Length: 379
Image (tube, rainbow, N blue to C red; front, side):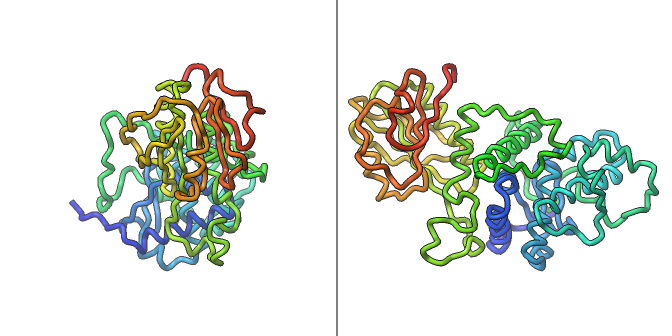
């Protein structure tokens, strides 16, 4: 077995820089890149995907201009997100790859990023589904474009590390990417631009519109702050640092749970479990949990798939102890699970606040600041 290529700090910086640059360009594309797992491999010419992970040749990536690298990574992530590997079925591999490349190159170009000089472009075909494009080019000579059509892999390269897949996890990749696409569209809508960059592509019309339940709203809230996908991260503007100069800076969330007796255990497990899902998909997000009644109990660091700490408290409800912790923790966002009946601080905090309210909780207008998100009757 070939020894896996190590993930070096230089490789991590290349990937991190691309993710950060994409944030300033498009909330949609940046969200997709955050969902992708990038793995170094010297067996791919530049980059490729098996539908689950994206494999990048670290030596080649280090020689590319930043915008060329961004276009290359986005190209492969779009292949994965659109399930181009899984959807091929019995079709001829090279022709299918050409059809998929034509569509993805159009999307990359729409993002304002360069595509390979030899890549084919067709403004009509690139807005169709890959199946339609495959049919339209199936009569073309097999030798056309032999320099393309080899980045959709049948499996991981031999120098890639094992996936470490859990039992029963196989087959979930396509559903996970569909969820990522839905979340990317939600984040794009929340960015204020009102522009779905792929809205006219038939490739995405096959996807059912995302149902924006409370879970999707929670993902939107965590994904859009604190960067807000602008040119700068607000925490670093005062230091004069560009986003490109940052390496894996964490986005921190303070999670508070009201344990005064008005919030049931199912709601606690649902919220904390969903936050753990965000942590697993967004490598830049970190979360700290506190329980609270008239005091704050914690901190507890949340990790993807980790055990939920047992609740503490059970007295009255006073929100102020949690808000007094903001200066100590300096989180980027605060999420507070409560029925809303308690003592609020006199002044609104500078930290974006999301109140997560179970059925029967305080009406929206009763919250003096922040956004209100209501849990469903049956979680």
